[in-house]
Image 1: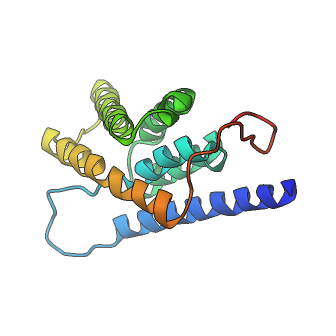
Image 2: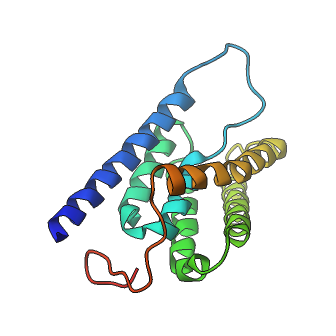
Length: 179
C-alpha cells in the first residue's frame, strides 16, 4: 500500500511539473502580434497553494524551485529572484497550513491573495534595489487581481474535479508524519 502511495505521489509531482511546462509554453506562444497590456494570472502559484493545503507531499521544496527556476529561465526574468520570492511565500504557506486547513474558504482565499501581494511587492523591491527594469505598477496590479480571481476556479478544479481534498483527521503521510 505504501509503494502505491509513493508511486502516486511521484506521478502527481510529474504531472505538476508537466502542467508548469505547459503554462510556460503558453506564455511563450505569441497569440497576437499586438502587445498586450494585461498579464496572465499566476495559475501555477494558485495550484501550488491549493495543493500545499490539501496534499503537501505533492509539492516539495525542490519541485517548487524547479518550476519557478524554469519560469525564470524561459521567460527571461532575472535568475533566481522570482524563484526566491515564491519559495519564501510557499514555505510561509507550508508552515501555516494547519491553521488554514481548519478555516473556511474565504479565509484561505484572503490569505492567498495577501501572500501573493506580498510576494509581488518583495519581488518589485528586490528588482528596484538591484537596479533592474521593473514592470509597471498597473501590470503588477492586473496580475494580482487576475491571480486572486483565478484562485477559486483553481481550487474548485482541484477539489471537485480532480478530487484532491484535505486530509482526514489523523491521517498520516508517506514518512509517518501527521498530515
